[in-house]
Image 1 (tube, rainbow, N blue to C red):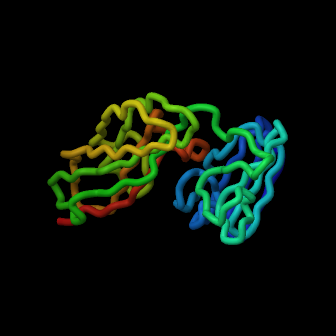
Image 2 (cartoon, rainbow, N blue to C red):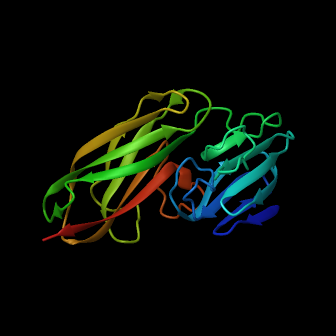
Length: 219
């Protein structure tokens, strides 16, 4: 690691390759991954970072090109973007910024399961929202799901499904619904969704691309 920073309940690290990673509490977007989801493992936020500093609920980073970026809580204008709007992804500090992401960058931001009570031996559907958090349009590739998994997710469980996402404009969201997913036997389970990626059991360093959702199957 090159540098570390800690806020009240979130942490950040710059790797030797200049990439910035964040994890912990994320209610105000202080991790900068485009969501308000708490992260138990590091997610990549920026590349080309030289320095980072964390406040209670916001973060500021200086890139190697000298530009300054901030994200998270902004009630008193602490992000320096000329507003008091909270930001879930890096925004340029007024007069000091460049571009945080140079091209398309896709992430899973939400999963909703239906019906709310999944019956053993039945099927259910998953509505998965994908976002292009980059600054350019791009082809998002394939959204892949692994369902009917134990509480600790893996990639070798039955019940996989996949659907192409298509092209997403910069900042755009698209929700895709996958039907007929097998509930399996009654138990506590997990669903893993990946966009533009292949499922990997240990995914500590590519969290932006995936979402893990726990759920229950009842008799």
